[in-house]
Image 1: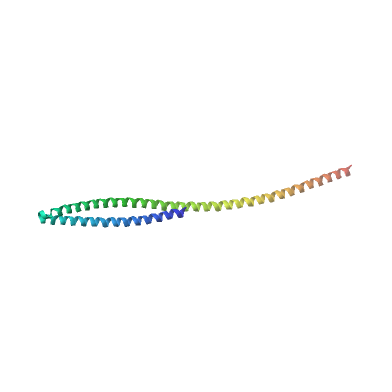
Image 2 (image 1 turned 120 degrees about the horizontal axis):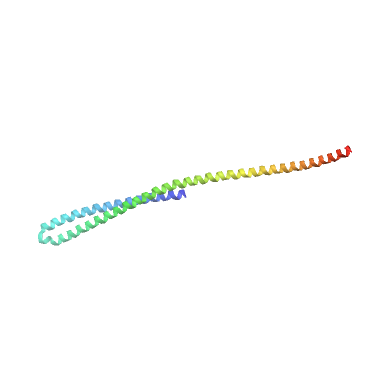
Length: 164
């Protein structure tokens, strides 16, 4: 379980790298949009200089400028989305790392419990063997006591016969 959580953290780090690459691409698109906007501005200026002959060119320059603005707005949305994804991935990675530490602690606790239970089972088995040995000793002592009682009873009868 701990290894699975660590693997998830590694994958989230890879996701963060991929998001960084996307952010770099979005930055490049933003720079292109700014340059396109400047070119459209220059084209508009040149169209105004050209007068009536540049009017169509001015309309095209205005459309290019509008497209550059839309591109910049879309790029800003992409960057916000990437930032949100990076923050979420970071939070997940941190949670995965905490979970990995907790899972390792739980695994260590399980190993310790398993060892303690093994030692307890071994102690119970030894105690059972000792109780069985004591029971055998008590049974032998009981047989000896019965034999001694029989001997004492026989001795008492013999003494009683002699005493008459």
